[in-house]
Image: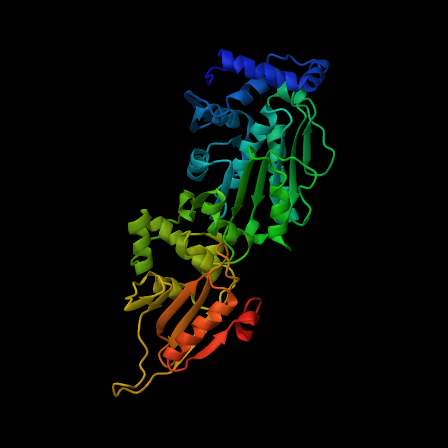
Length: 453
C-alpha cells in the first residue's frame, strides 16, 4: 500500500521500514552519532524511499513565476532536492518538460532512449537516480559519459543537487565524503553516486550497480559493446538501466541495441527535437516545401519551428539528423558518415514498390523480371550487390540487390538469414536468371566464405 502523507504509514509500510532500518543499523548508528534528528533525517529518507512511486494529491510547485505539479512522491522529492541551472544561468527547481514527463510516465527497469540534443533527459535521469540514491541505503548509482568533458558536465549537475539540499539533511543524514574525482559518498546511508567515462573497458567489474545510465552510447570509444556488457553485468535484475544517445549512423553498439530492444526487453523511448519548446524562430516564411508541409501535417509543427529547422539545416547540413532527430525509423540512416544523399534514399523508401513475383516465403521479391531478349527486345545487363551475414536467426540479415545496369532500377531483392554457402548458391541462381548478372560481394568477414563457396 502506498502512503500519501509525509509521515503516514499503513502496517505494510511500517514492517518494510523496520526491515530496511534493521538491514542498515550501522548507517542509522552513524547518523545518530552525527547528532541528526532521526525523524527528519535518516528515518525520513528511508520512509520516502518506500513510496517513491506512490501517487499523492497533486502538489503545486512554484519557483518565482514558474509553476509545476507533482503527482507522485518521486516527482515531489525531485522538485525539492534537484536544483538545476537553466539556460539563462539561474538556479531553480527542476520542472519536468514534455520529454522528461513522457519518460517518467513510460520508463521501466530497462530503457533505451533515442533523442534530439538538449531535451533534458540526462538531467532528469540524474535527478531520478539521485533521489533513489539518497532514499535507499546501500545504493550505488553510476552515470557513464562518452568522454571526460561530458562526464565533468554530468557531475556538475549531480554536485549542484548536493550543494542545494536542505541544510538539515546536508549536515546530517546526507553529509558527504568523496573518495575520488566525480564521486559522492553518503556515509550515513552507505550510498554512493559516481560519474565515469566509457574509456575503461573494465568499467563495472567488482561493483554492484543499482542504477546505471549510459549516455551517448553511439559515441562511446573503443569496443563500446564490450564496455556496455561489463557495466550491465554489474546491475542486478531489479536494478535500473538507461541507454541513451543521439543517433550516429545505422551501425554500432547503440544502433544494434535499438534494433533488438523488443527482443531484449528494453523499453524504447524516442524524443524528436520539436518536443523542446525553445526550438523555434520567429521568422516569416512565405512558402513551405513538401517535407515541411508533411511535418506540419503529421506532427503539428508551426512556422516558428520550421524556421528553426531551416536554420539548423543551414548550420549542420547533413549532420542535422545527428543533433536534431526527427524520426526513429530514418534518423540512424540520415546520421553518421553517408556516401549517398540520405534524403533521396529516404524518399525512395517511402515510395510503394509493386511486387510482381515472390519466392521462398517472400525472401526473394521481384519488382521487374529479367529482360532476356526472348521476345525480340534487346536483352538487359544486370548487376548484383551482395551483403553477407553470419546466417544465425538472431543476427543480421544477408541481402542481395539486382540492379539494371543502364537505368539503375532495382529489379529484385533477396533477404534472409542465410549462411555463406547457402547465400552463394542462391545468388548464383538469381544471377543466372538475370542474364548472368555481374555479382559484387562485400568480401569483409563473411564475404570471404561466400566468395569461396
